[in-house]
Length: 253
Ligand code: MG
Image (cartoon, rainbow, N blue to C red; front, top):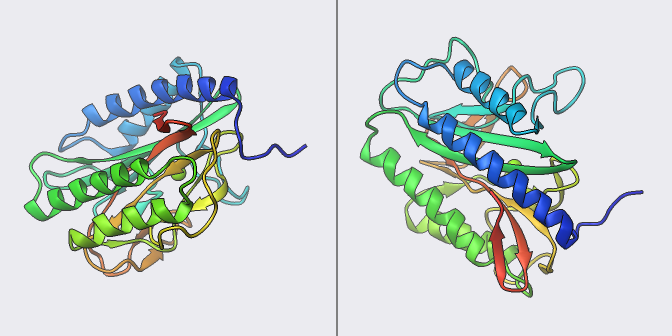
């Protein structure tokens, strides 16, 4: 039987437990980011730590059987927006920014979270993009409460992004999460206040703004996963799994 979008209090506690463990893995991997490390090494570490935490890396083997995602961690460098594939050849350099996006199945329930990390000293522009992306996620989360709508979240994200002089990706969106890696509803990062589904207590969503330095158009690389900015500009990504509670959003990651 297909389960609905609303999670029980017990399920939310399990998602929160998994989310805390996953956040620790993500921050430990982020702590390893430095010039000279490969994204392969970051992924090996993250997969091992997820297993040590009692979870399963939910991105690994995700997708179509003909081309499943090969890793537990997405590593998205500079102009890569999301879904970059870890590789021994992808060695981080001073001045890069790298998005680390990670998902875990824990006790049968899923969480999803991402951050963008500077590699050594980065440009003022890159720092501004990273800061605006984080700020837009926080603004979006502040709108995630019962009675508000998906559009309120979307509007808050877009406003912060565009006021900072950046664009928000249209073709990739946040999503419900919990029983599956990706569930309904779609949670766009652009939109109008009051539009879309009303948020209800017990809904669990992954909110994930993706901001671009210039235009928001995307291209898919030949590997069938890596999604980059069409114009080659930088992009940053932050994501939390949150539960809608009667008191507002509860961040679970
Ligand atoms: Mg996600």
